[in-house]
Length: 564
Image (spheres, one colour):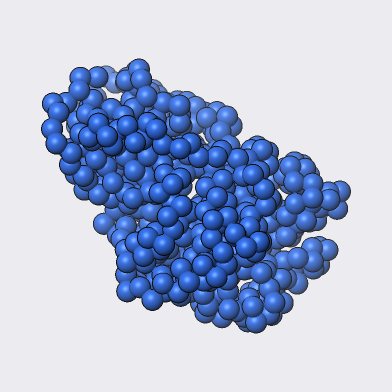
């Protein structure tokens, strides 16, 4: 890469979503390929053969993404499986075929126009479905590259470690990032809880999103990326570069059970999405699993997995923590995770539609099979198996789920608190439910009415919002009234600065990507429970999210010591 001309330091600002400080040369994500020519196919072209070429190209893209999903784990595997399912979606191929036959479009142009139609339909639906429009465009570009025999879209490879700069990243690209090559990520788009942020944290790659001016960065230019402060420094000074090079290395494994400086226990757990992720979490020192996403067994399929298949998968997860807590979330289908055998097509607003536990109202057998499989696997394990339902809004729903679990011999049934109504009335939900876990990603989205993928709404899409912290406080208060534990399993738990605040609000456990465990553990070990409560009070008293974050960080000098 050719370095840019040196100049004085200039700081760009965005939202730090994955901690760490790195210095490196910029490599920009290639621009999306241009639209193929609208010229019709040459006279005499066989439309059936052209349509077959599109179908074959889509199948090869689907297979390549499915293989990548099989080789990945956790959130990356889930995202790749969803993208593979999009490539297999017959609506895209059928629309392209129609255009080839009726308008004599070339195969590449037919795919382009068909994908734009599908993407526009998704954007019109809004919410999480609108997020998938970017995925459709990614699949489109891959199919067209397959048709034309050109290089598919993907991460650049300058031949040396680099700072990746992009307008935004498709989930399939982010899921394939190699932390040994990608030093840091800077994007113009995205938000604090978007897929790019979640995957960057899981990979341990410092990341700053929603950076105004990110696309002004040139290939080869040296930048310092601070994934905690959200700063991207162009042409950093020699002293700044040296400070990064000589920074104290942070621990890579959780040393012991989570404790504050005065011995108050805070269970530090891991979020995982498949059996391989459970093994990795155990190796990272997690005390248990606070969120096991069961969607991995359902994605990319036309029918649900059988009970025996599920028993085998759950047994592998339990085996990773033979004496630890394993919290299983039942199927969270709907919204951005549509499944053909569960979710209905054409919902006007899927984010507010039939998703999570609500799908069991229409398909009760799928939930019963899942609970039967969990109970069977738990019966032959010494793990402490807890089960929770996603998207619970009312006490009636919580009670019904507890009864369903009890019918299968599962005594420790709980609820996710992702809807403001559930936080406001947590005491009612926990009258019979044994525990609650705050899903802060959705709680932020619903409380602030802010799409987490939109960079323009990034200032709203943060758990530092005082209104969101008030909801957390109310949920914990409801738990205390019923003597029920309330944990956090959303991305907020992985924020080392926010963790003491959550503990001060009354949270008893924090579940996060395994890579964040050592940092969170080190910060908690540096503060007392009273200090956590004081920091929580400071955050709640703040008028804005920025004020809350700045005030708390100022009260945690350990963050600077750890480079967080």
